[in-house]
Image (cartoon, rainbow, N blue to C red; front, side, top):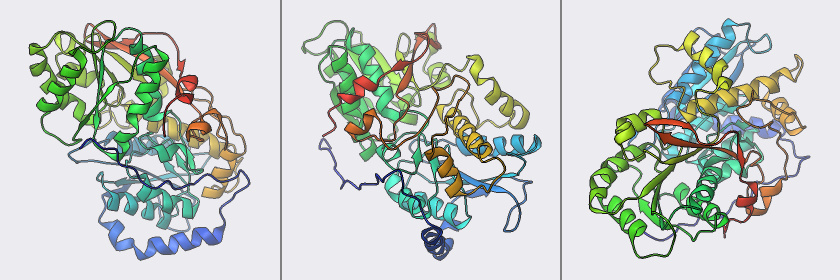
Length: 442
């Protein structure tokens, strides 16, 4: 399939003065109750040892992600959320109250994603935190109808940067690809982008092209690939042909991969296929590769050696991650699902950091979906210890012009694989706001 799929645009942009009413929330809760049987089929859980049910003083939140699927999986996100709840509750609770975490498996499909959102409504969750799902069209209507904020989603769909109930902590795939394109544009010959043949994947080429253009380069060849394949020989060959063909450009051709968990599978095919082609460079984004993937691909002798990798946050060795690592060591040291180098785990930590500051800003007042959302909408400035710039959400910003009114953090970090290790290639953050403003998203 080579055509772009287009879905009707659903405007969710609302004025700053908009507030969800309790009657609307009650209606959504009733709808969730009617679907209780469906939601029970979804893999959900709560943190053990924390009191639940009506009448207790727990603050209820939810974290969801796909687990056990043939595409991208993020089991570390809900696992870390449960560990965080154990840690915060062992240290006095969240502003003196117990934190109750519901978890849910969205199975990387629409029905389960919707069921997760319905359960969040039914259980009176005050927020959905640090979650991953490609199916925003399925879950956002339930959250929006109930007024439940979506804080620190992974950034995999454009809706996370348009919904007034979304509070993203990073710039999602748009910033990663724009930053990578800008870096590669100055030194690459022809560029091939290998990305999923999905609706979410359709949004990626314009962002990489915006970065390449900013670097004085032409656009990339768009190479579609199944997101759940077990081998990618055909796609690897096509990408190499595009990157090493007779196209204009200075320097060695580049192959950019953005296949999530399937990036490692693609690189296995790429490593076998590349022997028949001239040398090329590779580039990718965090979330598609981490240190474990680099090690499995051969480390210093593998195809990632020398690759540029863009991320949202500092490298895992940065001291700014010390607090997150403390939570893991104290509450989840033996949980192999939780990897501190995983961007999903890192994003979940930042999401809960945002939520904690929002709750503390209420000074002991009622903690509800309305009050949390109100705190964030009223100009609360959230600091993350250097992991991101100071975060503050409004309803207008510079990237509203390209359809991303909620994208408030356009900073990326540039990393590289050197001697088999993922290290910082440049100090600090790179702001790609100006690059994204020129993206052709029509």
